[in-house]
Length: 465
Image 1 (cartoon, rainbow, N blue to C red):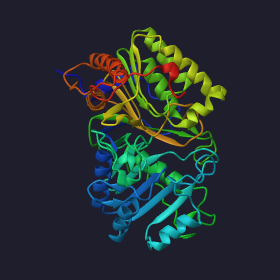
Image 2 (image 1 turned 180 degrees about the horizontal axis):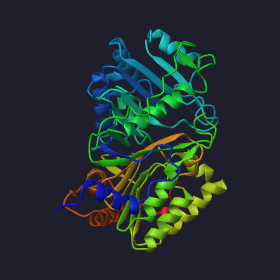
Image 3 (image 1 turned 90 degrees about the vertical axis):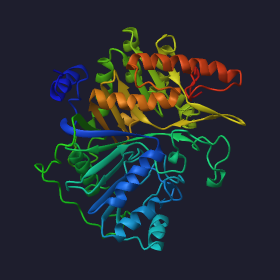
Image 4 (image 1 turned 60 degrees about the vertical axis):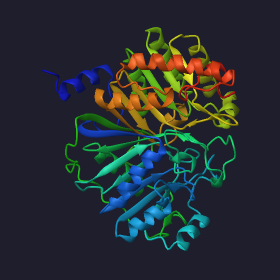
């Protein structure tokens, strides 16, 4: 007789312990689905919004107003306007950038210009702006029909931008979107999760905490309609969504101490979870991340490599230029130093996906923030692997302990990168083959030849230089 989901979960929780610092509890009885690449994720998200009957609540970090959702649905504002016109309670938390994001053309700050955009559209839904000093309110989450039996959440890292609408084929961006050949953010790979079940209550509570505590809501242009948005009633702690599936999951966050009244000590559970999951790895660790420079995570990966664990990290081959510029920062430079040492391990591969066009090779920009370990544990969210995402930016991930969900997620990611079907392979075998393909592709690229899949090995010592 096969082990029950409860026994399987108990074994996995021993092997990859959940963080002791998490504010939200570990919850069983969830249904967790990975949505890989923006074309898939935003098609599902938009469909849920279109079917919403009571509410749509969204956390937004980066937004291009002219980005259009799949299926001819129009823009983010179009989608929400249509829902509000049906009488749905639509609320959006926008990041109000005060530091490095101020003035960026892919943010929607709480200012006169944004208010004018909403006024021109006669927007009928509510918005509040939330700042975190010079840090980023980086959570990306959607909650549909909160508090009802149909409640569903989406937690991940995909920004609402034109390049983020790419599908798994990663075709060349349409020049009519304003991109030039080789633009860094023209073709983006990213991931969301779709959640049903008890852990959705914690996505609900996170939104309520941030909505009611939004830093700008009492300031001019800090809310829409200006000064006329209402607080949310806190969820009844006993009103938890019904069991929806077999998966044990937990909502984990990074929140600065004192940023919200309910978290005087903040929360740093995503960092703790990465470290315990890697420490428990036996077979492989597969990571996709936009920024792969956390010294403590890299050191834990080095220890895993010493044990014979295979480690692959998929990163952007043309990373954001701020990373190279920040090499003089002691904390970031320490991450670079450890990353360079990982290149000496045969079982480690730093991989940057790219695609051969008729004009040359185009990098696929990895914006995902995900990990899978041993076909047993995984995480999907907004958290970059750098200290400022652990102890500065506001982040949210969902972690899950479930062999079926973890394997399905691993297969979707590796098959896309490596160009073969790994569903009949064990995780370690699939990752080993991915490493072989990535290294062979690096040689093919140097010779100007065609690639197998997208994965292409890069020198860890030269990444982001």
